[in-house]
Length: 317
Image 1 (cartoon, rainbow, N blue to C red):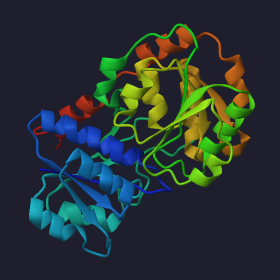
Image 2 (image 1 turned 90 degrees about the horizontal axis):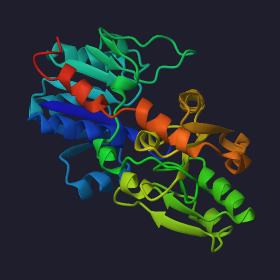
Image 3 (image 1 turned 30 degrees about the horizontal axis):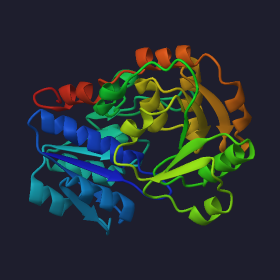
Image 4 (image 1 turned 45 degrees about the horizontal axis):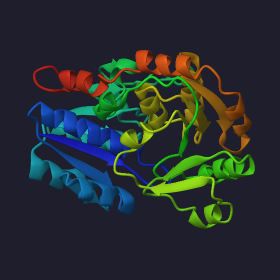
């Protein structure tokens, strides 16, 4: 039994939720049982879990010993944390119950006690991830395998889509739409389930922009376009794997490195960090076919399966 524990909020975005949902499906395909635990009452994330009918628990009170009732209820063999800040007390409590700890992109004080630490996108300026075994590189990047059904080589730029996160914490969608309306560039704009900037967006809308909200499958929606404006998180990597070139905006400091990395791979152009982003780079996007091909070839889709091979018995020791 696996407990997949994550945080998701307007400030953090919903990427951790989507990553653990993909891992859940990968475990299920191997005959493993799992439950998703959401720390904090984030309504859009809760609604997503309910709509997908995934087994889940909501932890509102994270006081000392909050893990114990879950351990008693599910008797897990492995606990997976995707919340960035595993603390030492929590890690040691799991170890005292004989539970294996797997953590993702974690710089909390408890990461050093992890049996396995998945840090697929470690950047050169970051300190080395701690843990008994550390997995780094694109081979361990969890992307939705649904992408395989929608991969295609783009050859020219005709249709544009904008998707800047499940929450778009800083309202960069508004900046993007302002630029697109000013330049009369048609685009479809996808608002995530946690988007909260509707009033500002309404003031600048015109007929060149088509709005869609919380589409059933962002991956399937992306298949209809030739270029995307995205944040610098997992969505940009999913687009690359599907053959969809991107113009990226870093919504967090740690995304700057991801955006630069995607540009180095040849599948993306980096516009800049938050309000510094230069969206006029959209007008100079060339080599769409080359960018599309680089994404398909360099950003592969085996991450979830590679991790499952290692965390499923008898491999995690």
